Figure: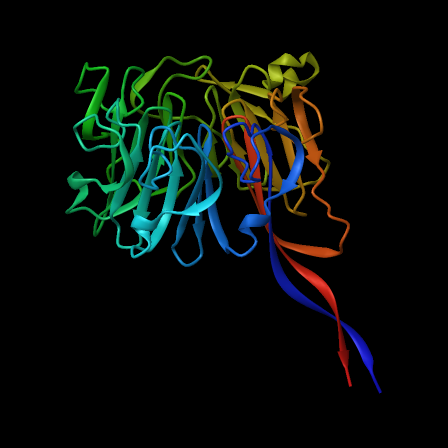
Length: 392
């Protein structure tokens, strides 16, 4: 007697869409994609995290291996050559013997932190954003000597600057380096336009940092108790800040991310709040102005979503945004010129719109994460797929 049962096995899908002329979509083509496309060349890699930069992407595998693709003209791919572009994921061979814990892709540079707490950087160093003090560019990851006696836990790469979090025995400390014209490295001690060596950022000592973001000309750090600090280019209603400023919020924040001109935060209640942003500011829709609340010159705007839907993750690109709902659905809004919203056109959207990621096969989503770069978007989706099984 035979009985057919439905068994479940975990599978991974990686999708990409938007700007693709530098090969950043990983689809082995050099064109924009208006709709999500499966990145088949990552099917054999168990992706634990992605980071999307100006036009390149870094993938961190669950075993600590690192892959990169997209624009490489400044050495940001870390593959040892100044290649114009790489159309599909390639391993960073110089890090093969060093298990990596976290990665970050900036505009034209990249950062890596090993599981042992050592930071590495590569790519464009003309503003000092690599932290080596020499303003040189490097086509392969170089350990940052300043942190030889520090235990680094996080790195975030922005447009032309980088932020690093160090974890001591009893407290945290934060450092910045690179372009500082708008205060984005968090140091008030220098009047230079850029700094090539890490500078201590005052005001965050002893604060347990659980989230770090850098994009455009500003930076942000999220504390374990749900407070968000930002510095650098000011949001609407606030001036530039050269040292961290606590952003007022009546709700606890569990996740935060930055775009060029905007910030997103996710509250403990699963609501999304936004600061700034021109093309997808809620102020562009008069009917939604009532959702905004003014506090100390900084306006947090509640981002409307489906009724009773709880958001579990957020991401910010240069000028577009994305979120993941509790049911695993992905929504995007903002600037759409390159198709980065994944809706089949190049229109801008003020409100979040659902992206169709269905492949027509039954699945139960277990983990969906969205990542945004400058004009492009990635989704990593792990799920339980049903497959028939016969028992004799």
